[in-house]
Length: 550
Image 1 (cartoon, rainbow, N blue to C red):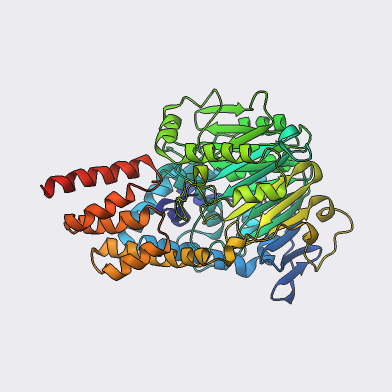
Image 2: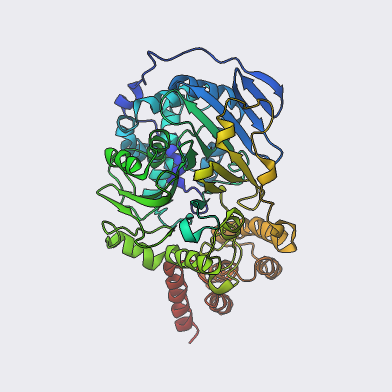
């Protein structure tokens, strides 16, 4: 997702629901209510029976849990206990940072209460039960906002609400698939970046969850503490799911969250047709592309869902499938919102970049997939500045992931972003009878090394740029504090990025120092600007400046 989870998405967590939703209780009868007993072996390894949580040497938390919905929720919550509470603190501190005004928080809570009034009616019973189990380990520090169960339920709609209300259609997730003559060994391979950013602390505790439910398919997914919905995952039948946001209208009521729908597909589908049938059953409240890869079908397809439309896209006479953040199916490609997205966002640029990558690399393997996901340059290898959302690698991703469905292999990126080591897992071994508890489930001999870029001065400069950029934002907000020395250093850290010229130019413009603003904005316009609206804003500012300086 776009940098910043956005105020609305975060404040989803502080909505308290309508009276009916407040009274709602999930189904728990018929499930095992036993309270898990957790054994702490070390600060990085916990177990409860055969269920385990272990932090591996690359910093990824590996979770293995099995049972009925209530037990999966309870055991996950018990094992993740401190991590889950930490994640809540991260979210609520972000809310306070973004919206310090208590009166504005109160107004937004009321608005989101209205949106969430029917959310509980659109989540399958077993998943509400699982969320209830998880919520038993939520912090009570926030009970004045909403009871733990409702907070957990609403969390799973945060992506959807924020996406719809703050135009998070302008996000940067990119994904691709190759098979047949487009892959090195002829087998299906998929890759994706999940460009979701909710602060540095949010991404510190990535969880690679391996779940063996009592019904449906065992599966893995890349997630975070407290999240049981799926954004990237594969089941033991070799079916994969990843999500890419599309342009959406503002909903009037919350329905099925996308991450819940994709979790259901992971758990109950083994083919593309079965995935399509599940998707058709659910009403969603935002628009999304779901890339589904299938070992049984030996290909991939896009399921494109919207509140008022549905489409399936497969490329005719091709063994590759590319996806950014606009729709491609006949049902949705000509939708006015989709056309607006193509014209105004960076989605088409990244799609064209994927085409360029596939032309440069005609045979995709896991190492090449990782190279594509990590590409920081623009079209024709143009330097467009680190962190530019037109790049496939925007240096903010929560994770990158690569799937080989027919072999049941998956690679998950370690921190930072998708730049750390891609750690390999074999689902045949993870869900096999000889799974060894107490050690990492990774197949370390198949790991893909970390990007060498992490050892460069350019990377160190980028990380410092992120710090300075937050200072720049504060100066813009206060309209004071910016100095020539600060600007010189700020621009030197990321000289190809248009932002480092635009923000000082905007600072001068808002302080009516038009002579100082003009060269900064003119320099920004020579760079690769992320979106058409941003470019138009600068052009409008310059027209006003030129009139003032006549």
